[in-house]
Length: 371
Image (tube, rainbow, N blue to C red; front, side, top):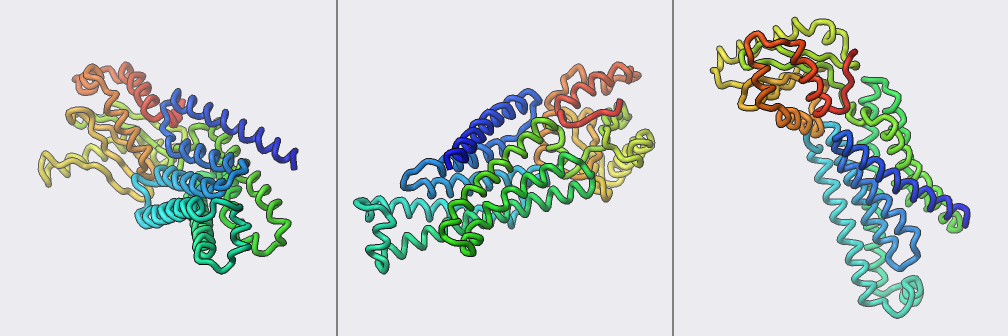
């Protein structure tokens, strides 16, 4: 038992330093992963609290663990779309609220009515009292909500990851799949505990604790080694193109994960997009602006440059919160001098290319160019 405790403590310390390294690396690469950092810190805090023997450790564990998985949900939703799934989001908000309220009321009641003796002794002496029944109900509700939160988030995350892997066959995504699987035990432990003897439940708790630490370690080590894979969820970006205010293509950049249909015909594609924009303006008015075009399975995003003096066109497999932040960062990074070069008649495209490459890499640090 002491060996397991020491091993667990070492894993927690390692995980803490790993989170610090990830925060540093993310800041250096200018990658925003606030949700997953918040999730890891809350889950780690819950695990640490569960190892401290005090009266309300299980209650604080439940609150922090449930909150951690809620932020994990927000992380995957940010990678999956530009906003969380409204139905799942509402359900999880309700679950989180019930968890916090039930455990808070439980703590207040214990502190108010059961202060003289240990809680279990009070239950044994007053098995049929109203207080015993109420605190037991609150414990059951809080525990059930916690498991329900974990199961919903894990299933949702696995669904997103499986969809990505089916499209990309990326090895790092497969590793993430197994990392999330480690969390499943935390969602079903209550149900498993009903099927095993009382003396075996403590061993089950330790096993699940170890698996949860392994899950976080695997998730973050995978990110440390391959930081760019995180932003491939759930889609790759295929092409970047920049057009001047006059609709002239001044920059085209293929990415290493481009499909042949996109990669081999950038000039034809640029011409087609220019023609489409022209037709829309002719038929619907000069002030009409195209923002997105769905060309299944591709999504074409038209992002205006400052003062509408040109446009960045990105061909990707979807549109997410992280992607939207990168677009905004790209627009904010275009100086007046760069804007003049883009719209300058007879501008040297070879001179403009490295400038745009640098700006793309700063705004989309997770993409890889074809050399």
